[in-house]
Length: 100
Image 1 (spheres, rainbow, N blue to C red):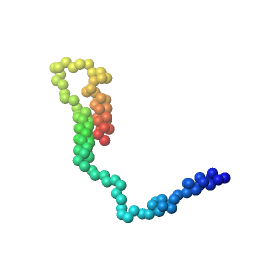
Image 2 (image 1 turned 45 degrees about the vertical axis):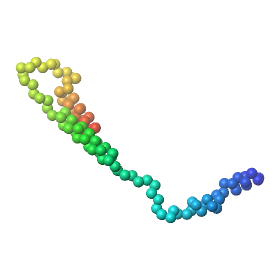
Image 3 (image 1 turned 60 degrees about the vertical axis):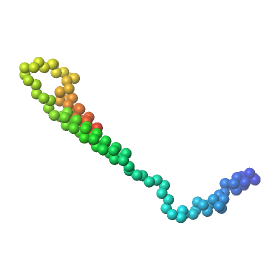
Image 4 (image 1 turned 120 degrees about the horizontal axis):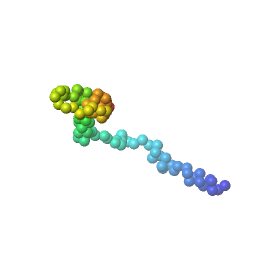
C-alpha cells in the first residue's frame, strides 16, 4: 500500500508551481500580430487579374464567331468543331466557374 501513496504524493502539484499558474500576468501579452504587407497586396492584385481574365474569356467564348464568306470552302463541321454552340457554351461555363 505504500507504493500508491508515494505515487499520489509525487503527482500532487507543488505549492510554488501552483502559484505560478494561478497568477495573472502583470500586463497584456501579445502572442501574434498579423501584418498585411506588400505580399498580400500583390497577391490580391493577382487574384483580381485572374478573375478579370477568366471573365473576359467567358464573354469572348459566348461571342459569335466571325462570319465566313460563301466563296471559301468550309471543312465539314463535326462534333469536335470549336465553333459549335455546345463547345462555346461549355467553355463559357468553365471559364465563368473559374472566375467566380
